[in-house]
Image (cartoon, rainbow, N blue to C red):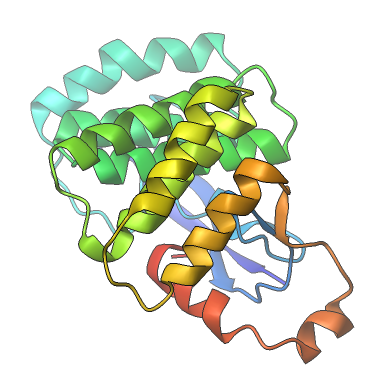
Length: 240
Ligand SMILES: [Zn+2]
């Protein structure tokens, strides 16, 4: 189970103080989707890794230290705050705000794409089908930009290309999904888990599945050897 504790946050943007919750412990025993959302039993930790100010919409992590750049403050006031009044503040939306603000701060395309991936996972989980396709398209856009700029670490090339394919598959764009699954199968880079990625890309192209680890009982999962998946999630995972 995921355990949460109360936390007092002071907004770096407007100075508002508000109460939120943070994750104190995680036991990830839930299902794992084929777009690499490792779910926890009970509450999903990724809902509580970032904080959105209810006054201005500034979104960040609790460990972030100020002062905030005045241009970013202005950006939040003009871009995020008006949306806070008009749109429902879902968990997916908070990750979208995080991505938009992080991009304004100059974070790289791979990092921004990873934030939109979290927005996509949560809008999928919460059934916000109106937001989900747009977030998935954002993931493809930022990951493709990161690949073109060659800023994706060699260790993450399989993961990144596979996920672009899987994003397209999940929005029903079969042509682009197959194109990217083919690209995964064509990668020549040596990787200790190369076979895993090739097999997964082939599976998602020919007989796609929604889960890598199906939702099953906790007792079954405890017996299961999960060292390989654990390693992947340490590197890229939803709880990191
Ligand atoms: Zn604020």
